Amino acid sequence: MLWSLIKILIFVAVVAALALGAGMLMESGAGVRVSIANTEFTLGPLQAAIAAVILLLAVWLLIKIAGLLVAVLRFLNGDETALSRYFDRNRERKGYEALADGMLALASGEGRQAMSKAAKAERYLRRPELTNLLSAQAAEMTGDRNKAREVYKRLLTEDRTRFVGVRGLMKQKLSEGDTDTALKLAEKAFALKPKHEETQDTLLKLQASHEDWAGARKTLGAKLRHGSLPRDVHKRRDAVLALSEARDVLAEGKTIEAREAAIEANRLSPDLVPAATLAAQSYIDQGKPRYAIRVIKKTWGVTPHPDLAAAFAAIEPDETPEARIKRFGPLLKIQPDHPETKLLTAELNIAAEDFPAARKALGNLYETDPTARSLTIMAAIERGEGADDAVVRGWLTRALTASRGPQWVCDNCHRVHGSWAPVCDNCSSFDTLSWKEAQSDEVAMPGGTEMLPLIVGKPDAPPPLPEATAEVVEEDAPEPEEEFEPVVPDAEIVVLDEEADTSSAKRPVAPD
Image (cartoon, rainbow, N blue to C red):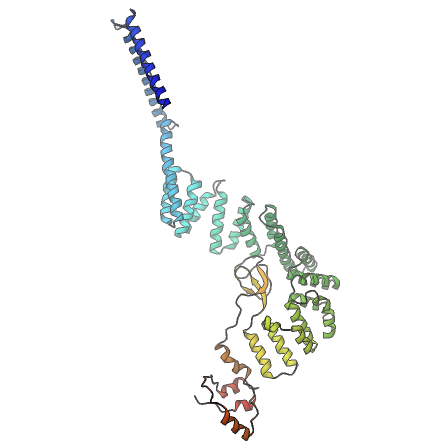
């Protein structure tokens, strides 16, 4: 309100000043005489002031018209002017609108519309580093791989977009299965941006799949330097690469280098079972059993494994079963409650034919953790103690359908491997094999438990009762409820189970 009042007062003061000035000019007797082409004009004071204002406006207008003419000439000449800047801003606005529409179309899954908008944006913006990437992604979405490859190659011509072009071509080669070319492109992308984590992982995976262990170790070191890999994980994976390198060197016949590489791998990761077994074997070959025992014990304290037990047995291959049990004693005391320790102790006692000790060592493992190995051990114990064949075959039958126990399983695709490998055979993932139980390794048998009588045979028939006793039982016994029992023809039992009791095979069969 106050500001409005002030503006009104200022306006009144200006009008009053102008009126006062005009009045003073009219009262003065002076004037202005102008002569143009022998014609004179006499102007009063007020008329002279108005003429001066008009003259100034005319001069300003002429200057502006001259500037406009100069700007038009410069515009036609191609120079940057206000007029050209106006058209540039207009074109830039349309180009960015087309680019934004193309990105929205790409996010919505409309590949063809995104390609159209990208072409329009390129026409207005003339910024290939922006529009080419949109065009490549839209071409890949529509399945036009040739168009995408062409765009990625155009990106290689500029320093700012060279990495994007190399990465795009690398992904195309990976999807096509051309891992050799993809490896070269990954090396180029890594040279352009060594800190790029995705490129590091891709290069490491490709180097491992091509068994370039030395190059993979360099890439792994770069991941550690750039902070994209924890130090403990780096030590573990470096040990895996060192172990793989040792295997290759051993295959080439260079035993000394292989021993050094195996020992280095075990030093980097003492809990890596394959590295420990290879290092122990190298010490055995060198005649250093104490070092081998120390390596095996250290790894056994972390992860008891059958391969470690086999390497421990290889230290004294010609010893008696009783001497082996005694020598294995310190190793078995490290983790006495571990299932592998119980299974190994039972197997050692079975080899020594001490079946009661084997049963005691196994405990109730066949109930708490029934695996094919524990159930097979129970079958061996029953056989050694003189149990019936039907009992032994019963344990073996359960072993057929039981879990296989711990195996080398890929953490990524859950593929089961017969032996450890640095790279998964199925998904090509690096260092993903773990010693654990597979998620689903049950063996499906046709007919389920209905097949068990055909495998283990029927139990022997009970001895016949005296006639008088049988009559009493028949008179006093209540009538049994009708139940449906599957009947297996005796002929099939005789064919499938030749060791079954003949008296059991000749029993009459109930009619259908």
